[in-house]
Image (cartoon, rainbow, N blue to C red; front, side, top):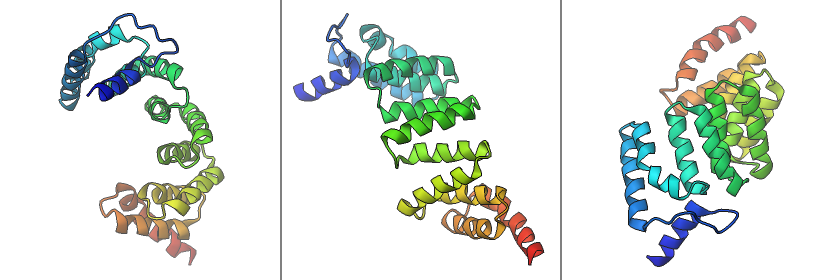
Amino acid sequence: MVVSYRFFLAGITALTTLVIAQDLPFADIEKAYTTSYALERAQKYSDAMRALSPVLRAYENGYTINYRMGWLSYLNGNYADALRYYKRSLAVYPASIEVLNCVSLVYKEQNDWVKVEEQNYQILKIDYFNTTANYWYAVALKTRRKYDLAEKVCRKMLTVFPSSVWFLQELAETLYFKKQYKESLELFSSVHILDPTNEAAKKYLPLLARLTQKKE
């Protein structure tokens, strides 16, 4: 138990210096997190954050607590607060993929597709095949009408995840916008087989069937 306790605290405190303003008993930390998770499941995000207040006061610059507070702020729609907490976590671990992916989600919710593109490009410099980063990078590129690059990203990921509905759908949509209707139809047909309830496939398949018939 001593080892796991120290490991957990290392994640919470993880400061550039080893100075800790205040220490909390492990039992208090455990209770705060347990309560917070229960409140999150009940979608009481503000209450979940309040439950962690003692931990945040004790470890203001800790990695784990700021990551957790950032996530709850994101769920609560407080995007400026989420970014502020994530920034504190990144000050401890600048290459943290889990935090960088969350920052991208905040930008996505703000419909800032320029930042979504830039954020995920930076993540891919660290982790070239990161699934989440590649997905949102492709979505951002498609949204910004950079179709050729979006296609390359999707095809790259499909070489390692050939049956990924995420990337099959993104590639199919990108090819639709490039007016490559035949291949788009084939891909959406695959999406429909792999995910019969897929809403994008239901939307595009009838449209693509008509478009391809016209070309023949």
